[in-house]
Length: 178
Image (tube, rainbow, N blue to C red; front, side, top):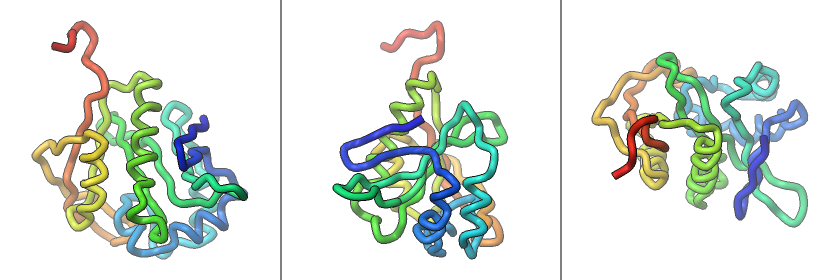
């Protein structure tokens, strides 16, 4: 699956992307805010990520800034399945591209994809010491559940407190919106 926004191309990651991926994400300030990315993160980790089996129903994407020349890798995003079975939205942006609205732009496209896939609801979480991620999720319409929970971060080598959020995309079958 591919998607395009005004400034971004969202596409699956390919083996050939490993060097660019390793360069873009190899920043402790990025990976410490992700649950599953290890630190340090280098070419071997990028190759392992790109070569790992993917859920055919829940897409993940690399984010490329569209340019007049070759697209530039600025981050990644996608969906994952939580142990509860619920679907979670996640993303990261390379530090050189922070504060430019790419996370929000990619997130809006992910919400459209989620609706197309017929997902009724999404979950998301952010570590409490990463409030910028929480602001992005709020811009996308996620609301706090009122719960915080410890969540493992590979890069941190342990747990950190995360704020749980949710977004309802569709009314359950049999209910009509008021």
